[in-house]
Length: 409
Image (tube, rainbow, N blue to C red; front, side, top):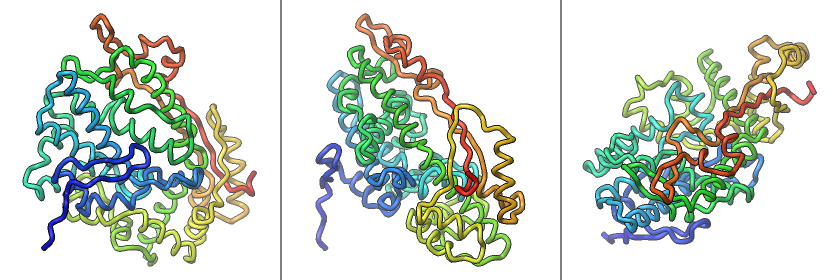
């Protein structure tokens, strides 16, 4: 049997050539659990707004690993001890940090599983892979779950300035064409250091941190929480809610076996076992899209219409405001659609609904970004920055939306 060369490279449009550092990483990438990420979109339904946003979580995971390699190199050059075992743990943890995402990402966390985050599922995947790979991921799991004694290792994987955020901002900016979201990840990494086991940024990197936080705020409101993307995601959540209801009522809906299982069972942390994990691993964007294409022809008017809206991009109208939607205005739209279609209250709620969006570009209360000053003192970036917007970025911004069919305009 021919043996394969496991030290291959990937050609990435963002960073150029990404080298696979060792055989463990190669084998993890080759595993069906990880290959599934090729079929999970990084930005969900954002391609309905930005046509180029078709990149996958596979792309993103490799990009994060590349940035982690750079970070390890920089920190070691500055005299920070990172053992070979810790290096392997960091690379595996960042490679697998998003492996628990379901199809179309965050919409699934409210639809096919209840109270089960993608981080929880990622950890289940890592534990299963650890058994397959004879304990090779033990250090990676301790880093990922924040239990490793060296705090900065976890901060490189999950914090307000981690390799995950550095990659997705740069990558999503590239694929959407939204240039304002582009950050200089390599410059930021060059400025990293460690003090008292905590990740810090050297003072000369403060303007890069400011630009990074501003880019993050811009990307959230312009891209991730774009009103068209929001209404599309809400429609997908409603579709799965309706499908679950119809299956419970005894209606037969054509779908893949894994999708049918999750729609016909209530899955939470208590019953998310090994067999559930294996079924979840068979679920990807293809299952959802093929279901939408089938369900647009079912007899149920609500499910059929909702599916057609996404398939044909004829979405609900959405209004985004800084103030909460008044109940009177909401009732006018609600009752107009209810009367026109002879719907019940519950049926109307699939087409007329409201909600809120929250975003905080920088959280000063949790894993804040610390600047290492030239005099050796550590200061929070928001205190040290002369950028007036940084304090504003620390406040939660809430916007309110209402969705309804265009004929109710």
